[in-house]
Image 1: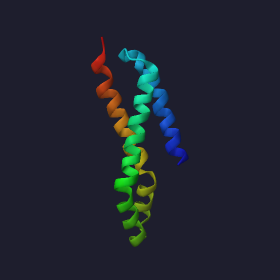
Image 2: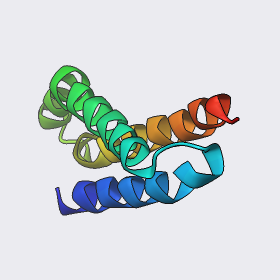
Image 3: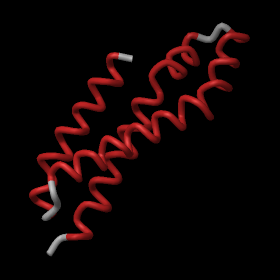
Length: 93
């Protein structure tokens, strides 16, 4: 949980500082990045993770336990990075 919070703060700061290069409002762009990270994280946690966690509990597989615990961070970070790199420059004036 702490690693996920640290990742969210890093995304928030990165979006804030990258907004100027895209010609966007830094506060709005930072909030957009945080929302992308949070929404993907929540969707992963509530829709995908229960089945992974169930499989890990029945199989006692260490790798699946690790995935069920930390995969949301990697998926959310990837979506936020793609969002920043693809959507950010489109509004450049």
